Image (cartoon, rainbow, N blue to C red; front, top):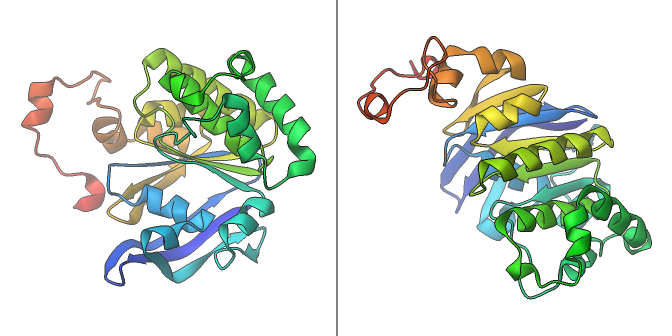
Length: 261
């Protein structure tokens, strides 16, 4: 199990971003972490994967543990070798390298498994196999997202952390990414999915958390969150009766979320 326990994170020794965050990702599960921009979702992922230092952040309280072993004091390569992979927001492929070169970079930490990793990725993403020699910068946005996910899978992670994988993609591509995450999970990889697209995330997750200004305000099974009045209204764009609000309704809307009352 991957566990975040009572985590506090500060940037630049002054800005408190996470305020006692606790969540778990059980083996074999898909867990969704929802929230608006600035809620602290990306910081949570950075804390798990050891990337806070690159952004002048540090954990000041709490811990991150994998199967009971504390990992937040390890460096990032050690965390990767322990079985955690991350797909960052914005894809961040190496644009001047080919598709296969990107994947080989992803497999650098486990060179003996390089062949198996390529076989797995090309099995999941046949389009990448077709484009294996193509320069990554010329791929479509959806193909680049697939490449970013494939690169993270090259280390055969037990836990895959994804930061806004649907961002900027057409609805059809979002559906493809959703189905691919389900396939990856069925192969034995647990998933922590950070998303603003609550509808997509809750459709495939077993459990979900909602984060607001550095705190978790809801912690429930995904099916329960999908029926929660505030989640439906503020994250799914629906009001009572299941109808979408018009832009005019949303623009002048004033009701506060229950958890902020």
